[in-house]
Image 1 (cartoon, one colour):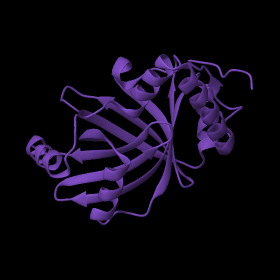
Image 2 (image 1 turned 90 degrees about the vertical axis):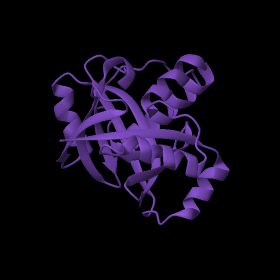
Image 3 (image 1 turned 90 degrees about the horizontal axis):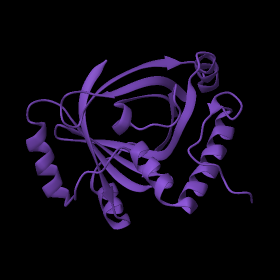
Length: 203
């Protein structure tokens, strides 16, 4: 279990490509988060924590992430699981329901004291996440924001998905279809009880 502070910033395609060229990044990997709860899809903002199954190129973990009293500060813990389907079956028996699916391509780099993550998130766009710890986190963040020309930080991906679902029926429809495709790919479409915020329109 550990505590970290993180911020995310939306990037234009040009800025994403510039940052991708500027540092030595890890090879891109696909990361899929499947959030879980007893009450369907709720956000970090409204509940203060999320439980999720994370799939990274076939390696699976069960994770907890929750807000602390600190600004942009999170408590995180995880345990490895043998398969995402096996873990989902156990969690389903405990009454947990499927929340949101966040599918992205991710690569990371270390710049001074910061861990940087470039994310290309399906349906949302391109982002830079900055993770920092220690007393100098605010000063280091300010330096990175100025150096990279970043704007205001933006909400967690799950919060952004729920906002998109609530504001645009077309976007919501596209998200639900993409979510169903990912669940089928991971073998979860018949495991977790699905409680969607929206249903797709008939094709």
